[in-house]
Picture (cartoon, rainbow, N blue to C red):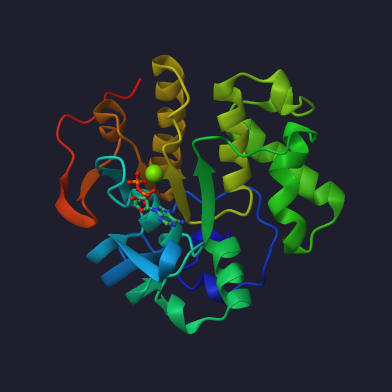
Length: 263
Ligand code: ADP
Ligand code: MG
């Protein structure tokens, strides 16, 4: 029951809980804290393209945060830094109390595997591999047997309503089903945090709603912290907090008004 433990670091990697805890992971404690975060990309000719200009943000465990903002405003850059997939040019990032900049690549990867599940707009599934094995893939590093990995993957597919599609290949599934596989894959390590970058960007309205109901359930019932980028106000309404980026800065940060009806 990793997620229930206020000191999850004390548990061995891959400690075999399958059913996530409803308690949440240190609910209310800061899970993410960034201070004076700057990012610039080096571009051709030795030039620097500044993208983030001093972002300060704290997100507590158990929050559901929507990030909005115009295309090019730095949302994905910011998400990649939160996910330890990229490093800031300056500023600090504390994830679960750890200064990410102070960790080497292996330690960052370990932190990422333990704490973060990713969901992307394009699903990013392996084409030749069944839904079940796509979901089981992140468990390769958890030191579990193949049958234990598949058992846990099956459990996660059940949570996203795909128990009857375990042996389907991605191209045999609809877009919404593929995104459910991707969400199950993001959940399989029982991470306390999900980062989703435009997860409904390729889906129709009704399917988007179904996907957002899954995120809402994970947040409410399991206390999973969710940070989700979207450009659709109707999607942002599922969150409790809205952060708006403009030109690499936070232009607005507040509660979501007109919360989406759950149904
Ligand atoms: P958003 O997700 O809000 O649309 P991004 O974070 O993807 O914005 O991009 C912000 C800016 O950074 C854009 O101008 C984009 O072209 C630039 N950018 C993003 N990734 C790179 C990169 N790897 N190298 C150079 N510039 C990049
Ligand atoms: Mg983006």
